[in-house]
Length: 247
Image 1 (cartoon, one colour):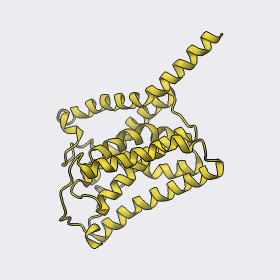
Image 2 (image 1 turned 30 degrees about the horizontal axis):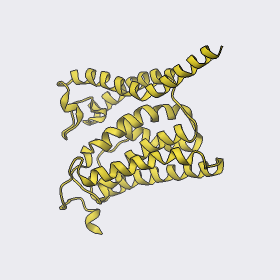
Image 3 (image 1 turned 120 degrees about the vertical axis):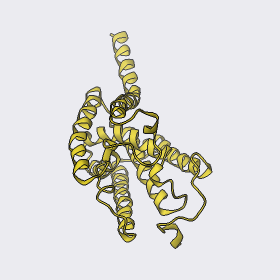
Image 4 (image 1 turned 135 degrees about the vertical axis):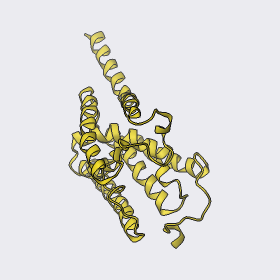
């Protein structure tokens, strides 16, 4: 059991889109799709219990990473402050689950799904480990839950993003980058990767050098967020067309 929590991993190498990786993706996908069924059978009491359970699991899972890092003496202010988008949203999501805060939901839907999906498809920060080691299990649970909770709140709880929230998320995300940039300069970190590309392989490697890749990332981020909004854009367009036809 100890080897699954060790700092130095000596097991088989993680294979991107290998069998273990595909199984993890399939489990997350199946979990998300299950909400299409449960939305019809869960009453308000059950939904409340589900939200609280998801919130507790999310918090405990993230705390476990910090406990593990402290135990092995690798906790570092430069890497483990909740300043990356996924980390910040991860700590806000339990509040959203308990209070049903729609503003937090908007950020979770766009940034949670967009960012967490990349981490699930290319788990670079935990790729030195393989299933069932704690480190990679924790990564997939955290990011998988961000995706699942966003879908749960949309499918089961009836929340949805709007065009206004689309622009709001883009605006405040860019504002958020400003203090993070100066925090990076102050403590020598690279949160949001605005100080340089990460040392491990990411999709940023396909972009230009610093600082130009930040502008390119803006365009990529805009495209991803817009793709996430398209289903609701189509729904609104169909509803408007039906109303005009009926009128």
